[in-house]
Image 1 (cartoon, rainbow, N blue to C red):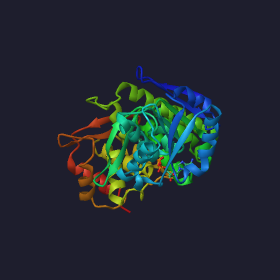
Image 2: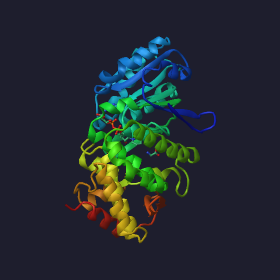
Image 3: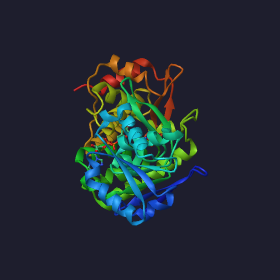
Length: 364
Ligand code: NAD
Ligand code: GLY
């Protein structure tokens, strides 16, 4: 088992990564306030993994109230959130009940927001089961739901007490979802870790073949990157750089997700195409070379990811991007690349260059 720590003073927590962890109730028990949890999962993940988790918890005397939600990004909504509140209230869960998320980023974001708000906040544990959630969404405390006008528009920062990433769960993950997770892995290389980018180029075939050691290394390295960034700028308030850099490709990507209809494009797929737009804009700003853009495109393609966005029309992209959380006082704050491995926040990219980069990455 690999173990990392996210350092946030008295809210610090461990990130445990490895095979065979789901049935280890003994790893979870020390982080509970009482021997009772509310387990939030969905109709796809629960049949695969709920019994294993419940068995391990039973051995250490922990009981659970299961809350099984419909599957998918289209259900990251108020309606699903209310189903969680209803179940917690019906089971008379109190402030000592820990909410545990078992699933991908959608379940993690929903369950985390429920934990942040139920009775003004109860303890929370993340048990991520997709590559994307193991390398990104389970770490750092961002929780929330979508609004028809924008992605993740309603939410809260609420850190978990523990992240338990069982890499065995990746064996049942569909190929398309594995590739989507790799988009966020590639992100860490692009924003600040050129050696990791090169490692990914050399090991992409093995990662896609689900080599356990390679996946565990990629997850550990990604989580270490993220933990460092979050520890330095938990609430994304740094004037330059900071946690915002983790959103490379996301402003374009969120427009793709909302514009195409939530669930049509996977989050990681939208991030991949959005990253190509950010790369193209960085090239038009005179920062990246064409050879850099080609290198990123080859890596995305090797990971089985799309490198062009849907043709929503530039005006629609810009309209959707204007709702982004990175808009401050009317200014769009984009994450761009000064070089591969060196991301920056940029408030003054010319509108015509943004439009041209979108256009370039949407053409057939
Ligand atoms: P997801 O949660 O929808 O999971 C993808 C699919 O895989 C779902 O159908 C799910 O049921 C299924 N699944 C999950 N685990 C499985 C397994 N082990 N075997 C088989 N099927 C499995 O999607 P995701 O890619 O995990 O997460 C995307 C979400 O995460 C988006 O809503 C995105 O906004 C959010 N996100 C949040 C943060 C954050 O910091 N909070 C960061 C990145 C992304
Ligand atoms: N996924 C971006 C963040 O956690 O800040």
